[in-house]
Length: 194
Image (cartoon, rainbow, N blue to C red; front, side, top):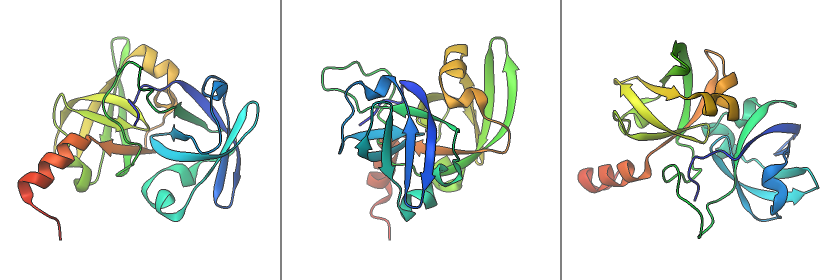
């Protein structure tokens, strides 16, 4: 389990068929083979570690649901290790199970902050509510407002400077993970999906 509090921005070292290698520093301090790591909101398993790099396998399901297939060497990525049992819970429950990708629709300034409007598929938007949580590329964010097709989040200066969201361009894909509690409530209310 993750919290959506990004530890550092790492970079793609290389892209191979079926796998990715990343350069990082902070998350490397105790990272080992078989650990989980959150990359742009996607929970992946570490398959090898070096002093400043780690590799992961990326399978078809991951490529279908995330923006990881569009990454190239040198691209920045948000990185977070799983929550330690004795750690602080600073964001919200993030599983790293990306539901779908959305698109950055617009960026506007709001004082020192940025307002990002993102479009998402209806399968995600049903769980997006004003002042609720959503993970965007692994970053825990509060929804400012929303409609049936899009939602707005505020990016404070710290988040802009310490996650990939500060360098995103209009039209780029983002990974979206809806609040797991909202999904369970919906399932309990509507019954089994067929």
